[in-house]
Amino acid sequence: MPNLEKCLTIDDLMEVARRRVPKQFFDYADSGAWTEQTYRANTEDFQKITLRQRVAVNLENRNLATTMLGQPVAMPVAIAPVGSTGMQAPDGEIKAARAAEKAGIIFTLSTMSICSIEDVAQNTSKPFWFQLYVMKDRAFIERLIDRAKAAKCSALVLTMDLQILGQRHKDVRNGLTVPPKFTPKFLFEIARKPRWAFGMLGTSRRTFRNIHGHVSEATNLSSLSKWTRTQFDLTLNWKDIAWIKKRFGGPVVVKGILDPEDARLAIENGADAIIVSNHGGRQLDGAPSTIRVLPEIVDAVGEKTEVFFDGGIRSGQDVIKALALGAKGTFIGRAMNYGLGAGGELGVMRALSIINTEMDTTMALMGERDIRNLGPHNIYSNDLLRRQGY
Ligand SMILES: Cc1cc2nc3c(=O)[nH]c(=O)nc-3n(C[C@H](O)[C@H](O)[C@H](O)COP(=O)(O)O)c2cc1C
Image (cartoon, rainbow, N blue to C red):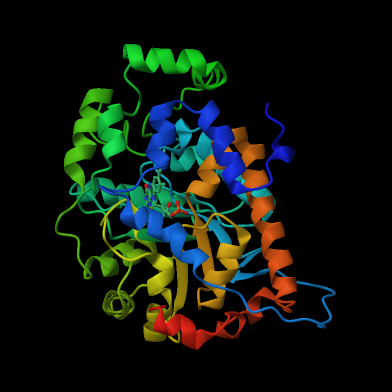
């Protein structure tokens, strides 16, 4: 086990994960669509935002706790739905969910997870959120929503930016499959990553367990991957929010909003909150970074609803910037993945602790004591930022 205490940043965890996770799965997370312009912009645009320093403020009794959708959280950082998390580390979703529970934050399970809804529910004690991809097989989707409800998931995250899949060149080049095919290249990879390989041998959770065994056309692994490839529903539209919400009977958060007009439409059609997201730069390459569009979306709907944010968060400072620009909560995808790949449950806890400390220190140095009080006044020279297009 690597000495996680030596990892001082999310980037440090990423480098450990690179050494421990087979290349095709590490690359799966560390990639964006096509030229990766949007993937890079998500992180680079955070660097263009500067924070306003204030001094001589009483900094005792600082608070990072708040609520997301009315649920108390120790900090406004949730774990984003990340497909195939259980390929970064054995039983990855269970480990990440447990780490989230210990840290007092929300965990979101992807439809395309390795561990199933039931696996995560049985191995945790607090409600988590479930992310839904709408597929053509409506009967399956209805059962999936019912399963999330039965597992007491406290919100449904409806992802609307993946009716078709953006091409990620690394995955094509690596011949990525879940579960992996035992090609000579992959065998060579796992020989270099024995800890990962032994861990995988020790678990039965190695395929998409929300789907496998739950649809008649996907009884074995090859029919499962074919079914999954052809199933994403091209007709998904705003009207679908209503029946999904009715079936689930709880709050529905619409994920994948990058435009103020779409934000308005999501709310008009019943979304209880939205997540400003470009899928971590994995879908429309050439789209703007999420931090760049966040202020205009907050202007459009922030009074009416909670606007959450994801994309490019690699530090607590990034979280602070998103909150100052109007987000009520944030989600991390890769930062969680890197922690998990580096050190399993402890690695995710390490990632969350790094972000927590960075948030607290940054907030204090800005002269703020309560995370709920952040706003545009914490950003240095708003006029300048506006001229730069923020
Ligand atoms: C490897 C990977 C898999 C993902 N799988 C899903 C998914 O199954 N469902 C979904 O809604 N979003 C998925 N996302 C997008 C994340 O939920 C989130 O929007 C994104 O990771 C945020 O950017 P960040 O990784 O820079 O934090 C995935 C992202 C990554 C990196």
